[in-house]
Image 1 (cartoon, helix red, strand yellow):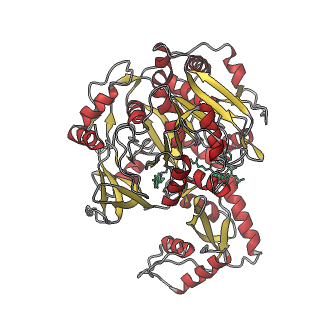
Image 2: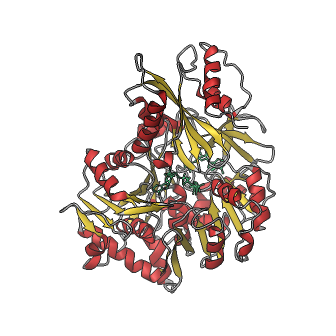
Image 3: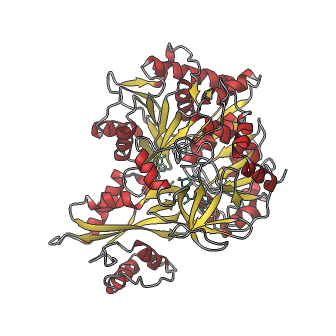
Length: 630
Ligand code: COA
Ligand code: AMP
């Protein structure tokens, strides 16, 4: 079958296509229909099926006689620890933790926040929640207490499961004090916190509330898998939107299972038993879909890697892991390759290792520049596949589906739409644009199984954020073009979201924090191009009248404030004080024009600009920060 056959097969009868894919899942009760559309534009897939995610990711492989196969390899160059866990062992560990959390009052539909470092226990915690029907919400370790508190208040978890610490190069990040602070400032209080104590920084426990990971499981009974409806949520994952309030992306149980299972063979081209490695973090969607769920659902071996592409200990660490664990397919973000290339431009480290098991490299999370793709291809000698997706979708919208057919590569394009996706390019009036023209990238409704059916606690926001601008379509928030062969080019965001080292961040959220500084009257944050991280945030601060403190002190306080309120992951270090911000006559800040000046890109003077002289002042302030870069 060619890609064209498969895509046209889906087009001809989408429901039959996904019902067939659903055959590969072990249902307690098979769904009688694929799509429920009586509440359009809100849709549900496999709503009347009964199924359990953990059963499909763990127990069914044991039942099929594959209990001795390795399910998880934990490899931590940062601590020197390594561990392999078979499917049989995983089943036991997950069932025991599941028994412990139900013993402490967690049941189907309850939320559990997981705030953990990259160890196998993070996956065990996710799977234990899925086993008993509790809805987990993993929070990335690089977020500050304030961000964790926002998520606690939105998800109102009965329980939090946390590591005592995470380990970053050169420092131990104590998670427990951040958790304590978050619970202190949140209005909602979880009943219990289970703490996975790590020797690098054991945590002090709060009596009555905190429970030790080992102690709570000691006498726990093994919990069975609880059947859920296909439309019940398996998890909530918060992602950045335009404002400081993150969006709680809901993942539905049935569609998630069906679609992720389908992708492992068709998109990633791996067979059960092979080793699949996504070097991301469980705090991001890549970690949910391709460290935890998809490889396990499909019966692969997955790797939990606690390290960085460089410095743990060197730029050869990825190649060491690929050789040692015989990785067949590897998935990471382009920024990781840029970091490796900077340290090892001629690929000396690559040649030290036997990469003969590696068949394909997959990149996503941000735009892959052709230069990075070509370097990776030359060094590794395997196809390098760029693919485009989002937290909201949970799997690739566009890809080169090597498991079906390796299509010709066009550098700069993540190739073509996957089954499930009818992608159009629209202008601001909602009219479809011809091939080659730049516009908003939208997907015709319904979205495929596994995509967000709504936002947690915020159906109106779901509709206004994604469905209202272009009726009948899902608005991706990305802009770009589709060429005459259907190849997509993802060029920019249409909102205030920026992408820093593959991490999705909201400039609006940063502006809210900066505006809380007592000396700041007004501010703007933009994303500027960066050769390593893709983009970096940059802040412009207008001070309140009468403030005559040292500007450098105020800038330093603002940098510290973002780190304190959002977290180190924001990588906010660039800021300057300006007299005024450039605006349109109606008062809209011209962030796009400022970003173009910072990047040294050509720009047209906006016809609606209030006072063009302000752009000269901005240009001067940028020059002091060293922008545009040569
Ligand atoms: N817990 C606590 N802090 C964390 C963290 C975690 N889980 N993850 C990152 N941080 C901190 C880092 O220590 C760093 O802090 P610093 O400002 O004190 O140095 C900050 O957050 C920024 O981290 P990061 O964006 O990872 O930058 P870096 O300079 O440490 O490393 C790269 C640069 C390119 C090596 C790194 O960004 C990388 O590996 N990127 C891969 C991207 C990726 O996997 N993206 C996921 C989407 S697919
Ligand atoms: P996230 O939700 O964190 O996965 O971020 C999703 C956003 O990252 C997308 O909307 C794009 O803006 C960007 N993105 C992800 N993958 C790609 C890609 N392959 N090419 C271009 N942009 C990408």
